[in-house]
Image (cartoon, rainbow, N blue to C red; front, side, top):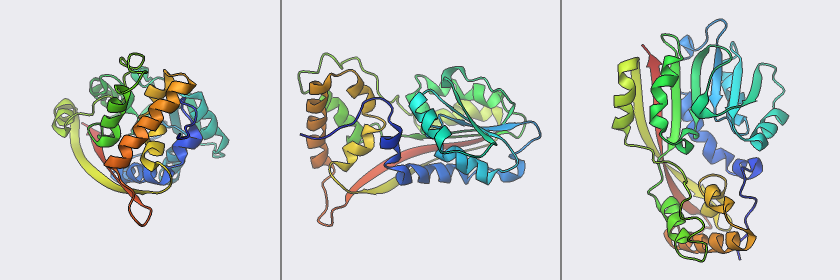
Amino acid sequence: MNDFKSPAWDANLYLKFADSRMRPALDLMGRLDPANAVRPGHAIYDLGCGAGNISRVLAERFPQAPVIGIDSSEDMLAKARSQSADPRISFSKGDLTRFEPTLPPSILYSNAAYQWVEGHIDYFPGLLKLLPSGGQLAIQMPRNHEAPSHALMRTAAEAGRWRDKIAKVKGIRTVHDPARYFDALKPLCSDLEIWETIYQQTLTGKDPVAQYTAGTGLRPYMQVLDEGERAGFYDAYCKLLAEAYPTRPDGITLFPFRRLFIVARRA
């Protein structure tokens, strides 16, 4: 039987793979234009800030502006507040579908959050409109929903006594082809860059891919199950993953992971 932690947002479980999650966040941040990033009286927002580790990096990169992290999870926000001593950084509970800035934004930044939002593409033009001319919108979302790591969640969900209970569970929302986002945002932009990267992640340990997804994509399935069902479902999922992502003789499991990036400048 495999081990699994609480199905709720668990900041410690999420941070177990902080290095793998940090790299795309830094790649996104690196495409921002620091020369036009900060305006008097404006703030930088980290939308879906999680445990706040990216918010702290944003504050280091742009020391002239306050950074405000927004997240819906009290556990994540508590972790973020406990690890931040910088008075320029603050954290607030909020819903990404009803985001209203308390200070005018100069940068709206979001790393791996909007893939949880139904119809997220419809919110992106509204986010751009919150920015002043030259303000920047930067978004990264996993686009790995058709990979075995995510497709096998559905296979495992249909293979056991828990099938009916989780039949209506909505996991990560579909992240569209890059052209869809280009068409939605280009009329509002003076500059727009959209690209994809596949990260060849190297994982180790027992059931490493399942441990990785347990902190994010697997969570909605686990939330609706009782303890016994949860263990059975997780065990079935791990067995499927072991075939899709075999461990190499050196103990490493290669886990390719596709991500989509958007950096837009308000016209």
